[in-house]
Image (cartoon, rainbow, N blue to C red; front, side, top):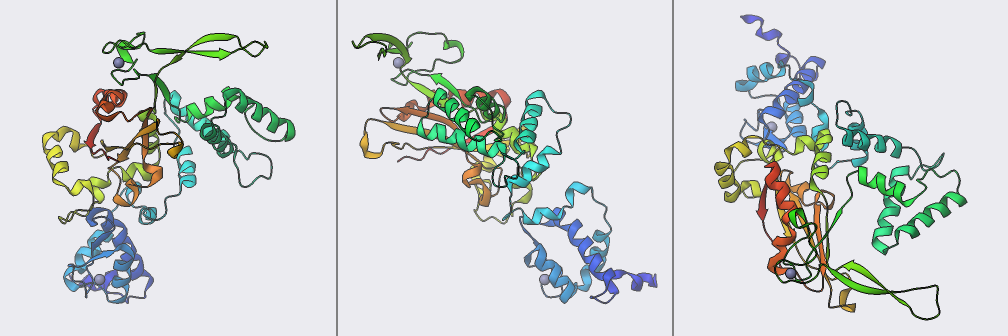
Length: 397
Ligand SMILES: [Zn+2]
Ligand SMILES: [Zn+2]
């Protein structure tokens, strides 16, 4: 049994074999023993009691070498063969380096065996990758459409106005690779899963005209009509001729959650991060994330079936009113309901790009307790798919 001297771990620390062995060890050990971004360093100085970042463990094992007690274990681990998906070096860069553009690329390579919605999504992404015009480097077709569409929404440009702008751009720049009508642009946005649904509501926030009440004409609780009649001044006459027109008295906007969540799992890096709360978290009793808290553990104990699948989604709900017109109009407020994806690590879950806008409520005053009424579409989805756990924490202004 004296051939142990032939093991790479006994070779000089600058030798190719030794360095290769250490690399293999870290690649295999990290996914298994790391907690968060760190693992216990088995080097001579850290003695497997100090938590160190992956790069530091590597440095220590090259510079000071392993504690002899751990030498055999290190050799053993270095010989594991793990499936490809577990040993990717890109995982270390995730914290600071999530590149959406790059992820889109990766998503495009995984488009086999998907449902038709998803195929549409990918085909739009493929199309969207085309440059806006030849030799254009700073805009793809897709980024341009999305930017233009967001301007439409921010400035309240009408649909026909948006269509006219598209036509003008096309006329002035025939080489521009853009959709030719509002509807064509809208369908691209919709297939990306960025669309929203308008749902009518009682102005007193008693009920939604949704589900079984979708066709109702007046509120079941207070009797108020679903519609207000506004008069539209006809333009083809000098006299102000009034044409009555029915307009919904109160409209909320609901942004379907399912496509948004599906997008997360289409991306390899995000899909892996969705288990962070269970697999990547450092479990040392300190509070850094809701997953460290008692309430989370209680829910796990209450719903073991739900919690046994780490990728099941746990969302926080937050809402706060603001007045889009500042003090210009104190009779109006907008209440967004925002979802926080708590499967993700703390450095990502509160980033603006990871917050999910679920519902927009606007009206003369805050919905107060009737916010529950507006949350019905969201809650229905939650119950139907049994995939979410809601931790309710409303922020009050
Ligand atoms: Zn060390
Ligand atoms: Zn009502």
